[in-house]
Image 1: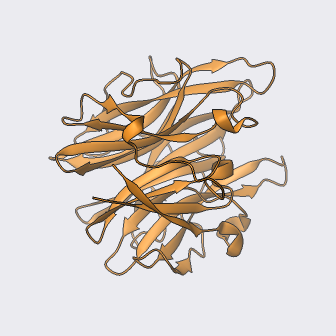
Image 2: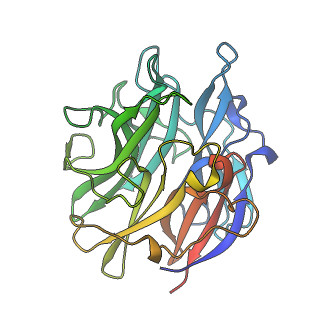
Length: 317
């Protein structure tokens, strides 16, 4: 794999976003139309009552050369959850998929906790207006914590191969009681299958091997089939110290498979590096791989977890 960087293509500070959101355009993910590409992302509103952030979904419609923003979402794309629900305090990320005549969204809902900062689960919603807005099928999640995956289920990415629905997601393995900072979470990439996209069966194992240590955090898997292989990109970091030490922050990882069961991790073949300077010189995170006009592209965030927007790279054959 070898990528040609096309640069940063969207900066949220240059636009008026719905829900009084400012800064942050995290986890860009696409819905491709005939004459444009809709890029969904998670942005943030500050809760005046608590001073904390609420994550909302917005989108930017771009031309297929990714050089011009055609329009920005004007209204709420999907409402946050009601009091006490799994997505009460935010949705980040959202993965949108076309299947037959439907446009579905798999959401990562956030809710705050007391002893630790957050809990997450995966929800589902459907669009009746061509992806402008989504309505939840129910108030609960379709994939959540279970006996051996006790917390932090989310970051779901869904594809349908040979009539089987596949979901790659993250799940928490433990919280570290860190005296220097807030409690730190550790999470890995898992896999589930479904016959209908709603009822899921977890595979129940860590899919991608660690390279840093046992507490490596792996996030936001994205998968594509290309040249007889399945290719996965994700981001990974150290569990502690990543906010202050850039060498411990997110970078992109890569793995491949021939059967969707066995995955070979090969970060050296990811084909993309940090820039010497600029928006992605210190961090690369939240990747999304997709096809458009017979080309393969990789969207991703840069420094400060996508505070200043996202960029794109094109696969070179």
